[in-house]
Amino acid sequence: MNEKSAVAALGALAQEARLRVFRALVGAGPAGMTPGALSALLDIPGSTLSFHLKELVHASLVTVEREGRNLHYRPALGHMSELLVYLTAHCCMGEPCAPRGAKRQTTC
Image 1 (cartoon, helix red, strand yellow):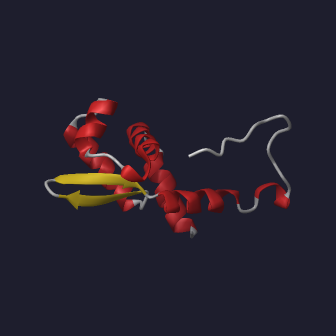
Image 2 (spheres, rainbow, N blue to C red):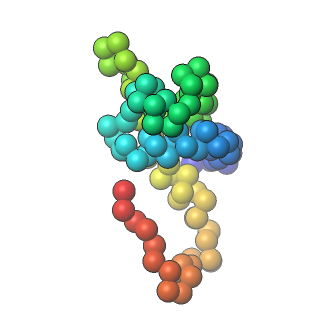
């Protein structure tokens, strides 16, 4: 990942509704969700949701696929992982950096 891609992804997530949408899609996993299901779950109007989904797709954090009459949005988990690697690549000068006694969450 390069700096430009990282800035685009972080910029897309720096908005409350988009962060909620992205977290919901990550929670759904590779199965993803339809806009209708997202709208109902998050109580976001369809037109507003469409705008936020477009921004997440543009930032490569979400993919969209037409399945029959429906659009299906899925989290781009690989891109998300690349962003996390990019952000932590030089963390703590290569030493383990989790605070003492802190448990790290690693479940998907």
